[in-house]
Image 1: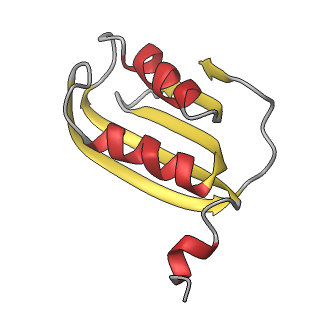
Image 2: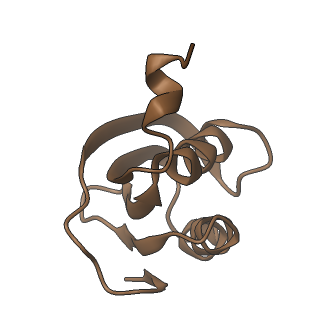
Image 3: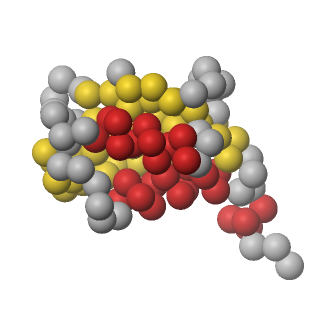
Length: 100
């Protein structure tokens, strides 16, 4: 029997995350881009005016989940205090992952 969460692991989704803390000026966007490309994801990482970094990633659910795990894990640049996530349907961003 297939687990409900496992059934949609190849479905394309959009993961939007907001990283709070000391996350700008520390190489966070470059680091996120590298991790996202390792997972084969498309999207971007952008500095926001309020000091957060926004991450928008699209691809298979399993790859987006893997990115979320590293965003919440150790070894990130800076000092992340909060990672807020939002899941939605993939909107079809251009291929590649950019720093904005």
